[in-house]
Length: 160
Image (cartoon, rainbow, N blue to C red; front, side, top):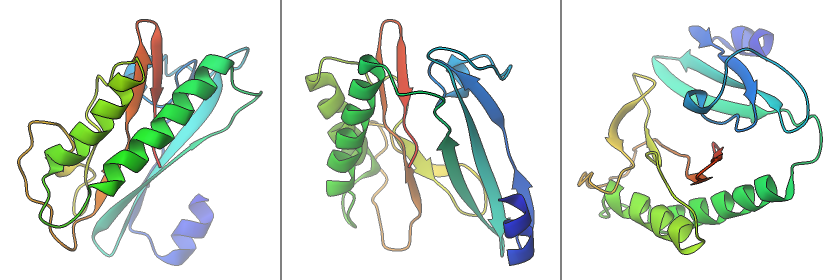
């Protein structure tokens, strides 16, 4: 992937790699890569092209997900869809977060992290996709949307 991006003219690439039971959030896992039951490696590719950043996260399952992880993933996909349905010019960043948070909580789980952020000249820019963010969404904004679904033992932070 890096070779392709360099040939395409990217200005910089940053690739954190890790693994764990809940691999989508660096705060929830040991960054010591490992394999085994319930663990899967993942990597994130952050690249900058013509002064703008992008984010790509890929999980590499070593086995079929457990029923619980499949449930988390299904809820995360549906929560993301709920957030994207309200991501329109004139709505607020907090509206997107509220739609995802409400969906996750109605499913019986918690939504402990922000649901995304903007990205442009930096990897992480305002607005944040949190309920409290009153930023009005406008055409041309680039927003990364990644809901999280957790229970008391951990869960899934979803990037797409």
